[in-house]
Image (cartoon, rainbow, N blue to C red; front, side):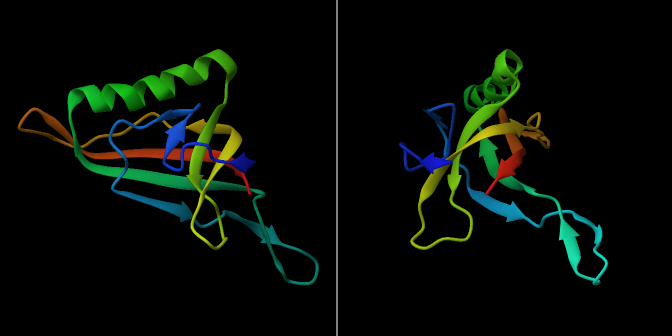
Length: 122
């Protein structure tokens, strides 16, 4: 994990042409409890990235980010750093991105776009 060079959401050093409208860290998966009753969580985190509407060209960029994972199996994603202040972006390596999901077409634009980044070591 290194300081993100772009200062914005990016994958493999390329900024999103349309920055996400929202992003959030998802709760870690509960794996069970240890012998003392303490919760045991997954070591890896997930981050959800959302857009309301985007053009076909912008959607093609995030689909290309997903497709590029095939070359190495992982990507480097610039996200807001988990649990720190001040707000800053960090580059998390060895991540995976889900295939982008979208809702209905509206006026030649995709809507309700979602991409989830997984395998994040914080």
